[in-house]
Length: 196
Image 1 (tube, rainbow, N blue to C red):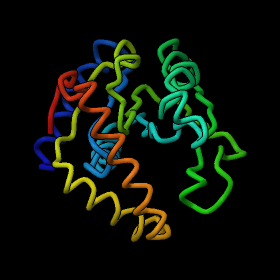
Image 2 (image 1 turned 30 degrees about the vertical axis):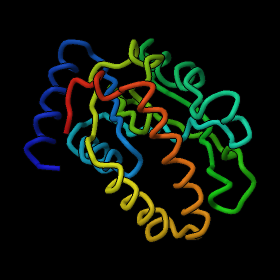
Image 3 (image 1 turned 90 degrees about the horizontal axis):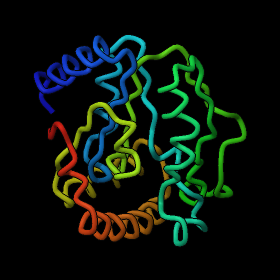
């Protein structure tokens, strides 16, 4: 991702902050596309901003088949609506990805607290889901091929997060199938204001 692209997005966000006060930026794309890298770069450039990962609002593994992959209702109730209402503190529990880490699947015991921000950078697959669109001010799609995304995602999980390669391989096989089917049903890229 080019530095100039990042600076252009920063300028757009700052303009939105001047006119709206509080801003929600959503970054969507395939797993491994570079969404987190962009989110971190934006937060570094934007005072009073916080990076919130959509992955923290994943359903537990046994709920995915019946309730969908992400808990958008909880994300809206615990983060997006309170933020829009002007609350200075957001508090929520993060999904722990236990089945990948070899621990019981569920949520971290201690809640995460985000305080005193007027920009939320919400990053993750499916952040441009139709249910979230009314809560977003700037919608970004990170464009990468399925092959490159898969390679990057698996390498990250194994090398950076030190997860078991066999678990990672099985999880990414399942994820890639879901992702392809999800994007075939719902072209979230078309909802983006910015494509990088």
